[in-house]
Image 1 (cartoon, rainbow, N blue to C red):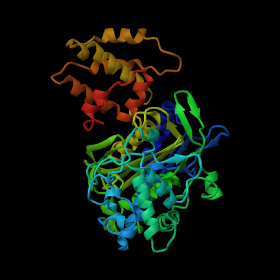
Image 2: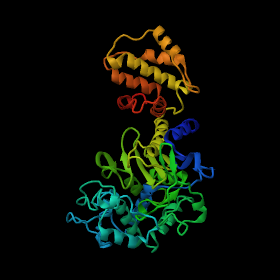
Image 3: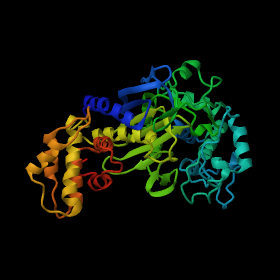
Image 4: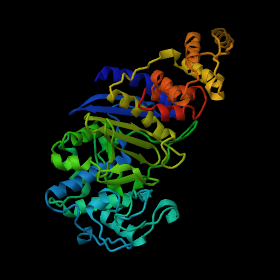
Amino acid sequence: MNIDGLAEALDAFVPEIMDHCGTPGLSIAVGVGTEVALSRAYGLADLATGRPMTTDTIGPTGSDAKAYTGVAALQLVERGLIGLDDPIDKHLPIVNPHGPRPITLRDLLTHRSGLGINLGNFHREPPPPLEKHLRRVFAAGRSDAYGGALTPFWAGPVGAAYQYSNVGIAVVGRLVELLNPDGVTFSEWVGEHVFAPLGMSSSVFPRAQHPDFVPAELLARRSTGYATLPGLRLPLPQLYVGDYPAGSALSTPSDHARFVFALLGGGGGVLSPGTARQMITAQASGGTLLGPSQDVSIGFVFNVFGGEHPYIGHGGEYPWGWSHFTRGWTEDRVALVISANQLDLGDFGTSDRPSHAAARLVAEIVTAWVHGADPRRRRARDGLSYLAGLLVGDRLTTRLGITTRPTAEELAGIADGTVVDPGVPWDVGAFCAAAGQVRMTDHPLRDNAELVLRELPAYELELLKRQLGVPGLGAFWQREGMGRGA
C-alpha cells in the first residue's frame, strides 16, 4: 500500500469535498497494522478566530464512544464479574414489560434489549451522576425524541429486534460503575483501563464536556461545532448528553484509530484476542437509527460488513455541531477515523446530508486505496469535460434508444460552440473522446456504468457530477457498475 499516494489523494480531494459539503474543518487518521500511518487536518477549528484544524484538535466522538463502553463492559466479563448472558436485573431493577425474558449484557451490546430508539436525553446543564439520571429516565418511561411522540420507550420484547438505544448503552456504563473491582466511576475506569494502556493521551470520557469534568488543556483544544444549512454555519449553545456512556467522549482521530486497530489486532492489551474478535464479529442482525435491517449485522456495538474486504463501522454525532466516522477493515488491519466540526440540520440520520456526506466521500477514497486501487485523480483537470462528454454521448444515443452515434464533426462543433464560465476547466479532446465512447449495446445501462466507473472512481464522480449541477446523476451507474470498475 502506497501511503504517499493516499496522502496525495486526500490533499487533492478533501478541500473540494469540504467546499461541496460546507464543512468548516475536518481531521483524518489512517492506522495500518499497529500504528497511525497517516494523519491530516484541513480547514478551521474555529471560524471566528481563524484557529486552524490540526491533527491535535479534539472533537466529540458522539456515538463512536459506545465502543469504549463496550470494551469496558467486556473487561468485566473477562474478569468473571458479569456474564454476557447474565440477567442484569441481578444488579439493576430494570425489567422489559413486554415479556418474561430478562435483559442481558449481550442484549444491551447488540441493541436488542427492547428499549426503543432515543436521542441521548440531552439537557442544557451537565447531567447528574449516572445512577440518578437512569433512575429518572426509567421512572419517566418516555423517549426524549419530541417528548415521547416519535418512538416508544419500550419498543418490544427482549431479543425481538434491533433498536438503537442510547439508554441501553448508558445502562452498560452503569453496570461498569457498579461492578468494576476498583470501585471507581465509569469515566475513571475507561480512562485507566482503556485509554491509558493504548496511549490515548488526548482522549477523555467525561460525564459532561464541561470545565468541571474535562482538563482545561484538553477542552482548550476542542473545535467549535457548527450546525449547518446551505450557506449558514450556526454556533449553537453547548448541550450535555444525559446518557453519557453512549456519547460524551472527546478524542482525536489518531487516538481513536489506535483504539480501532488495537481491536483489529487482537485486543491491544485491553481485551484478550478472543474477546476482541468476538466484538468485531457478527453476533446478530442489526440496523440503523431508522430501524432493523437484515442487510446489516452487529457485533458488540460495531456494525459488521462482509465481502472481499470485510470491515466494521460506526459513526457519531454530537448536537449540534460535530460528526465522527469510523471504519476498520478486519483482514487488511486498516483503521480510518474522520472528525468534522459540522452537524447539518437537514433530515435526521440520513447519509446524504452534508455532515455525513463529507466523511462518506473521504471514506470512498480510502476504501479504493485499501482495495488496491490508486486513489489519486485519474483525469486531473479534464474530468469535468470527460463527464460532460459521457452525458452528451448518452443523451444523443442510448438514453433515447438511438443506435447511430454523432460524428466526429458534430462533436467538434458542439465542443467549439460550448460557452464555458470563467475559471471552469474545459478540454475539447476529453469531451469528444468521451462522447464518442458511448454506444448502444445489448446491455447499455450496465456497459455505461462500467465505462463511467472505469474512468471516474466513485468519489471523483460524486464531486464532478455536483459541479455539473445535476443532483442525483449516476445513481444507476454506481449501482450497476460498483465492484466492476470502481
